[in-house]
Length: 370
Image (cartoon, rainbow, N blue to C red):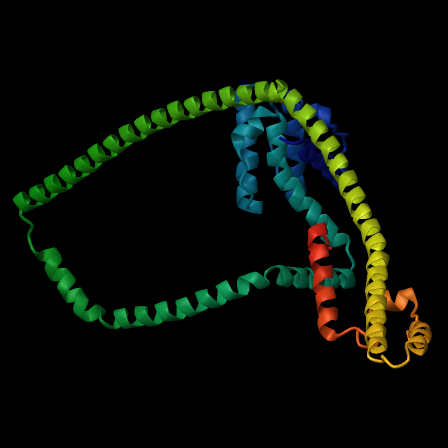
């Protein structure tokens, strides 16, 4: 018996107007006097003119009172009560008396409620029940269709009842031979015994299977415990190679930093070397061009044999003119390659040879990749 039921019972009895105060503690121990008083009062509420024996001194009187109240409630109020629990007169008897008090309490609430409120409550209750039972509509429709089909089949069978009645009466009137009946019964008994034996064998197999499964379960449980212990030991113990691994990792980090520094230095030195090589190449090209121009001027001077002095002077003047006629280009234009070899007085073959020489020098210096 729960505490909520005890509390509800006491509240309902107070609302119904029971002359005595009832507490939850009254039913901790058997209290037949209080239970008998409550039962008599509830019976009088249903039927004020009913007379019940109030003497409960002997055991027979108490049993008689309980039986009368239970019979009265079963016939008048259609409430079925457990007489054994009522006779216990403890918390379990409260559960039985709560059946009567709940009916009286609901009736009192209905009587006190106004007609308009009652209509609204019934309407809201109908809506609530309809909303909660929408899921049952499909089942109800299915049952209705099944009832219709069953009724049609029953109607057809009842139409055949005239013919079937004759066959049934003929079968009943036919005398049965005891030997055939005995054989059929023995055969049925034999089948039942075979089924019983099969069931016993299956039960034995089930018991053995359960034992095997329990053994396997214990074995797996032991293995799991062992593996867990191993895992804990492995997690707690540090491997021997970890110290060496940490040292090698530190050395690797230092080597990596050193390699990065060497690479940056190497790249910087290569850039510096390229910047120094480019002006030297330009100066050598210009010197070679000047030598070629002087050679051409000397060949032109040797062809004039008539005026040696004039030629010498002319050569000196021509050389000066040649030197002055050669355009002196800025170094940045020559390095950038904006002036071609023909403008400087150099053939295309010589320019190609110079480019090849430059490529070979670049390859020897290892600057192709940059």
